[in-house]
Length: 56
Image (tube, rainbow, N blue to C red; front, side, top):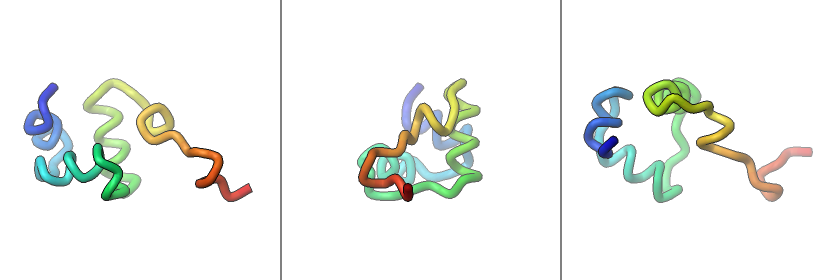
């Protein structure tokens, strides 16, 4: 799936998809869920927390 196709499926701009892929932008929960649905994946698989990001 291209960035353009994903952006259309999710309802955001291609530039938003690029920024998310580069780690320059953290999507809202709503957008993250839509990305997961479009890709047949889960938010946890697509956006795993690293040890540094953990709040524990």
